[in-house]
Length: 537
Ligand code: NAD
Image (cartoon, rainbow, N blue to C red; front, side, top):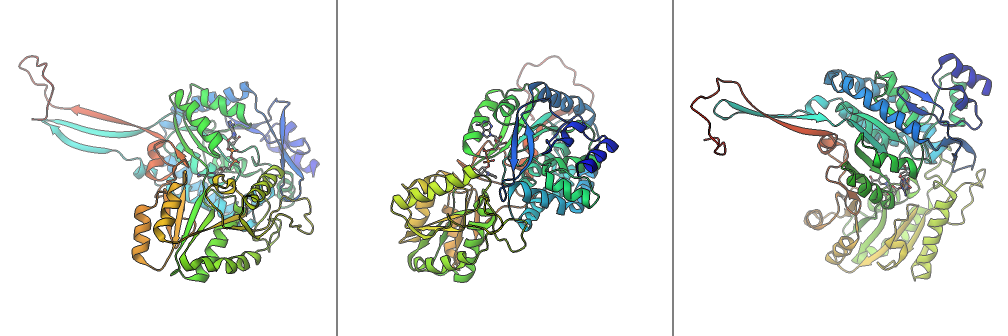
């Protein structure tokens, strides 16, 4: 395998051989159109969460390398912003075609590094692909406005211009979708980009390399594959750059004077730090953060459809989705559905994501598993009833994996740590409310506002919910109401910091500066100087 891998790299010259010849492989940076091995001696292991195998290592990119990436983006900007919008759109048209071509490879890479099931990994790619498709219509999305003759012979129009160098900082849970929320919109608007993938699943891993060599197709991991595809689609060198690392590189991104805007997705601790540090430097920041998404279940809801939706949204991706439904508020008689919910959850198959029968895979790390188990324990100690306990699950063939089976805690109250903290694991909290009003009031007291759903057959209850609930994304009999890219991802309250959300119109506004031009093309008036405020009369 290593002989083959090295011959591939030597023959293509895609990357410095040193990074690819290492075992495990070291993930390269992408600077100015070249995949280059970092000179850093510090690395972090990327671990397959189902097996504990070290699949690759990421470098803690040096400051010089980071500066080189920003400089490459800065130098690529003037030519790229002057590239016709139709050409930029065509790169996206080609990119969406190439992502479809390589979707299986991308999904396999995601499952190996992140752990989610292959089917879910396909969804991860597909939801990002939809943003690329949307960016194909950028000429219309970026269009300005025009009002002729605002005063005698004077016209005013506005245009949206790219900002310059923008950056993206990603979490581990959607290794394809979230980079694709960011760079396609940014670059099609005419910006250049520096992407920092999550250190937990940056791409390039041994299993994927082994498979791709077997099938004759050179491969890296999600962010790296996406960047390769973008360049194959025609993105010029330097328009998209990738650097790896953790806090230091993130702080360097916040502080760099050449970076104009930062897209962040991740936890509140990192997100609020980045928001305040980068804003203090005058940058635009959009920061999508943590969540505690509630479902309110009314007794008139369709029982089976509701329970299936709760189980899918609570335990899918092992609960590691920012829009996972982690808390259910049963109203009135629907409280008696808890037993059926447990039966439904018990039927789920926990296995490595590569196994065809897997419904949910492992959580990302041993530390994550430990944290989730501690929160379950603290719930029990505070008086919650453990209706289903997935902590001691053993998956044959994957005994070392970070697996937690579906877990259900009932009788949870607002003061418990398991409720106050985002668990980010396959744990569903059940609470009870005597009335619909009480349930709405309860949900609104939570600090997060990413999403909330209601299950009911009553139109008036649904309407009351949609009006009164304080969450940015509302589902009515829809458990995970993530909007498609022609809308925006509109998390609110503590789940978002900034003004302009990801993708949709807001995403285009985020990555562009509006410029308003007032022009007069008639013979200039004579008759002396007037210092009075000009009016349109
Ligand atoms: P994380 O905050 O640990 O990491 C995200 C990024 O921030 C990484 O690239 C990491 O290197 C960097 N980072 C982490 N701590 C930092 C620090 N102290 N200083 C500077 N940089 C730092 O998040 P994660 O564990 O990778 O992802 C899970 C979190 O992301 C959950 O809270 C989840 O709800 C959230 N999330 C939110 C959305 C959304 O759209 N609202 C989507 C996906 C994930």
